[in-house]
Length: 78
Image (spheres, rainbow, N blue to C red):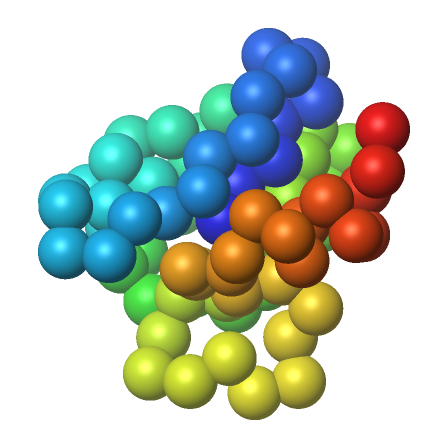
């Protein structure tokens, strides 16, 4: 799950449809310059946007991969 403030988009990661590849491609738009992109990553909240946790289980993260659109809408209604 990605939220990008400068480019005004939300990417909701699909299941089994190259979602991680697309998410890794779009991730630099949602984070600070010169931050690395990894397949597995911790949740990141920056001035440019939000990168949801990618890994085996969501743990205590507020944002994670495959996060349902209903949960995102509940957190960010506007």
